[in-house]
Length: 342
Image (cartoon, rainbow, N blue to C red):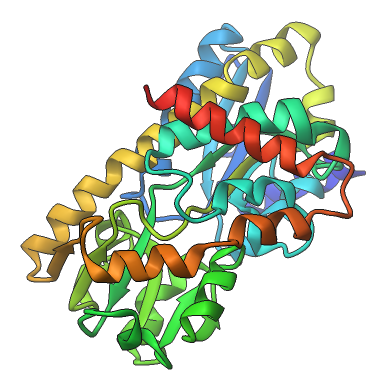
């Protein structure tokens, strides 16, 4: 039934390879849902690279087609699980309470390099989180994080007191805990809504990595980009596949797809998203945004470090209903980050 519904949808949308009149030797076409603009590293680097990997690994038997997803990013997981799309990605915390364990990567101050954090998160999932089956109904292909989240605002931030009462867009996860401690007024919304919310004056700023100064054009609606040396938080993403679609393939093609996913795809995504932060900083400077590079010696950084204390325990407490040994998982994650950073 799922396959019939999916085939009908693509036929109606006119997006199938046959409908377009383009001949293809592929036996299977994987439709990938993406919700970010073409300038994003996910669309410019990650998906095209994975597409190439999959098509080469399967000797052309599996073709990958990337489709623009016009729905809310929060519904991507459901769209893949229901078979409307074969593959997609989204922010884990957009579905509160479902993917709780992977938020270990969102603890402030743990990650300064997105590639390192992404590989460490995948390794920790494989060793500690898999048995909890948080991804039941989905086939997990990769886990990754963006570069450290920073302050994108329409006002200067010289101390944490400057944030008190300000309306800040947040995306969910442990950044919510940070926002609560900062005493900001939180406005929950997916990242792509940030431009609109800033432009209309609904919010005074947004917690997002520097990359989004370029990708989401925040350089047009912010006056200040305040960069903390370790960032403020990171966000965990998942790349998932419909299990029925995967099972419908031959063993050789299933194995081929998984061979170019997992740690390899996690590393690719983390590296691409992390590198994009530099492009965002350059874009901000070019557009006249006041870019402030803080150091560990700055008073505001010391204030933030003190404010973040104990959030790691908050994460441990938040996953107490899971089977995973949270303390051991956190220690392993930190060890991975340290070793991979050397």
